Each structure stands twice: as C-alpha cells, then as structure tokens.
Length: 294
Image (cartoon, rainbow, N blue to C red; front, side, top):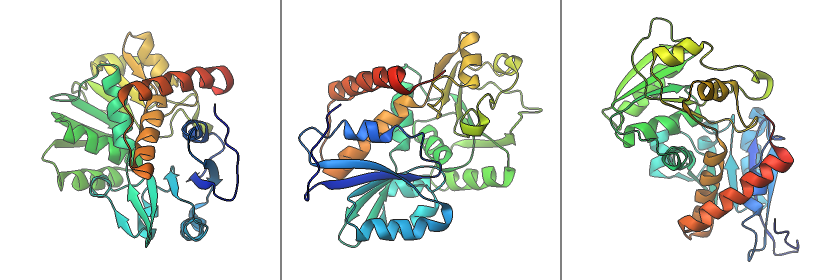
C-alpha cells in the first residue's frame, strides 16, 4: 500500500464510530493516496460526544468523514445539508466538508447493491428478508425497494423500530413490507435473499446468527445470504448458509464499494470498474493475509 509523506498541506479524512479498533477503512481509503496528499485516520467517538466531534472535526478542517455504528442516524442532526438519497434512507455514512459545514451522504446502499450484483444475486421481483432496523438496515431497505423487490420482510428485536422503518420506506416506495419477530416464529413465506445488518456475528456477538436453525434456511427456501459483517470473514450466518449450498456474501465487498463511492464524493471524480475490481482484489489479499480471521 502507498504511504504518503505528511506535511503542512496534507488533507485529513477519517472514520468515526464506537467501537472503531476493528475498522479496515483506513487501509482501504489510504490505498487511494497515490497522487494525493491525504491521510485517513480512525476516531473513536462515544454517543455523548458526537456533536462535539463533528463540530471539532469541521473546525480542524477535516475534509471528509465516514460514519459507522452507532452514529449513522444521530449525525444527521449536526449537518448543514443532506443528500436526497441519504434522506430517503434516513441515515448518513459519509460527510463532505463544505463552506457552511458538512453535507451528509449515504453510500452503504451502493455497497450492498454492488456486493449482490458481483455474485449475480438479483433483487427485482424477489422476497427480501432483512434483519435489523438501524442505519445499515435503512440502506438495505431502500436498496431493495428501489431495485423492485416483490416483498420486504423486516425482522428486528424491537418491533416498534421495525414498524418505524416500514413507515419510513413506504413514504417513498410502494413495496409491500411485513414486520416479523426476530426469531421468525410463525413465519413461513419464501425468502429469496436474506440480509443481516445486525451485530449478530460481530464483536461480543461472534458465534451468533440471526438464523439459528439450519431448517429455517430450508423452510424459507433462502437462495442467497448477505452479511454486513466482515470481521470475522465468515460469520456463523454465512457458514451455515454455505453448508447448505446457499450463496454467501460477507460485508467486505460492501466496505470496499461504499469506500470507493465516498472517494468519488470527496474528490468529485469517477473510478472505472477495472480500478474498483483491482482495488478490491488487492485489499482482499491483504486482509486475508494480515487481518482476517474465520
């Protein structure tokens, strides 16, 4: 990976979240450093310090920020403007410095969509089972609705939050949406694609899965699974899916593709598909060699 010389003209970018020590974003974003005088750093920001962090970053002249769990919704309160797609999603994961403050964008939906398409998984006219109702779930829900999903099924621990997400999506799309128990008790409809945006399988929840019973994969006739988690490389959710011959996609591609989209926003340029794929392949090799764990 390219290492830039840091000087008085270096533009600083970063990622804020809590926790943040696991993030692979600096490796990805700094891989774009060739030809640019930039540095990208991780910043651990607690919920209680979010407003101060955003205002402080702007005062320091930090040119762009990525935003991860748990700040994707709350950060919207501290921005000068929000992109139309991010407003639809109801969450922001990318901030761009401008004259009056930060403008908020959402590139998560691009990351999820590209990840599915790269494995030839189509959403149009399919039933999509979505686990979670947070920021990443909002992006996944908008992606599914905008791509023409036949039905969206939201499974979340707190039904009230799932209902809020349903109402929010139906402001913009006419997609049929069902809300079900997180454990899928009593639910028996076919679900072509299952998407996990919860923290099950990550951090203190390693070894957990939103689908605990292999028979549920078969009962729901799931054909493809996407997990927003990328550390570990294969969560229990994906291992179980693979054991049944189901297409299993982890969150690494999402991370790479949404990072490319953030770069395109910050520097107002487009990267061609070959550059994206070369970057993705290079980063996957690096991740598996130095970082990734099963």
